Length: 385
Image (cartoon, rainbow, N blue to C red; front, side, top):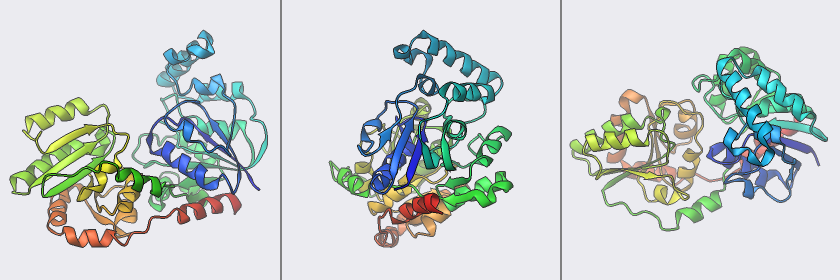
């Protein structure tokens, strides 16, 4: 049985954490898996399969993922280190702080067939998510890989430091072909290192949760968005578009599930447009799937995205997707016939067409088969070839 080490910065929130837990569930009986999680806390931490060996807690790793005020259990020394590393990174870059952390961590016990940094590096001036540096410097493995979940061209972290870091790995596993192509455009020398590692999903759990108190919408046409309330999600633009649909005579409602820094701004914009009776901010929800299942469409108006897990989640619930033309949208939506993709300037016309032809798109997405078979094949290829 091959020995695999996977390093991840945290399991608190987000699609990366969710995808990793599902990956672990699918591989823990086939590989001898060790997890190096920097922060031994978080909403998903308790979901780690019992077969997975966990590297013991390390204060130097924890301080990269916690605020200075949340390090009391380790002692005041680590609070000071956190503050200094964060300040240095903000003023200069993360090279010296990352090297310092790796030196303090030292070598992780064991020799592995493959070590995987499960997450792309953050921007050069942000002190967190050092899984890549730790795998390169602190792990003994025959092969090393890093998983890219972002649009490397657009997310703000494409810089010489991160480019050099990625090139140190034997393999760069992108969560879609389009994500991999974006990395190659930024780092042409990485072309021979690129492979695909699709996200894993718990389709059975998604279906079960979606059936618990499924939302019943009152309007003839219902849209739902599940996203962090942040600028790259295109929600401000969406408000104007849905308002125009309403004014054009469409009986439509739009429910936005998620929290984030733009909530107050979006609330003000919705109020300013007198749209609060048909554009509803639902806030963060433990169970977003009950909102998706009863909707006519999943609406993704993002400015940029990599390979959103919610595409597959919606399709598994037989809800078609309407998305702007972000990095992987054509590959993951149109090519698999689970919805429509269009440029940002045409999204209103796209919505109109979709709402006028709901039967066509519903019948298309009914053909979608939920499975982790391809994702498991991707992982086996990454490990075994």
